[in-house]
Length: 74
Image (cartoon, rainbow, N blue to C red):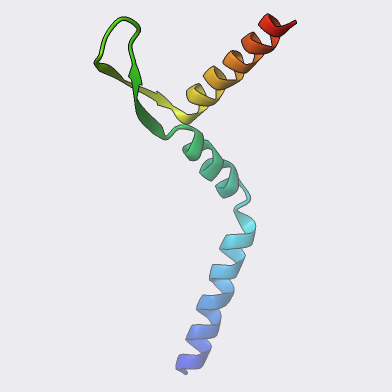
């Protein structure tokens, strides 16, 4: 009897895992919404400033910096 219950539980769990494709989107979204804090130097000071942004904001900032550097090079 316990084997039948275990088999039924495994079937239900596998159907839930297959039936929920949005979980991957939610997982990716939560990775981008994670807050990351960095201690960055401040111009004209010996102290560093703590700046907290989401991973998405850090990625966009890095992308803009690279584009600006490419623009300056040309």
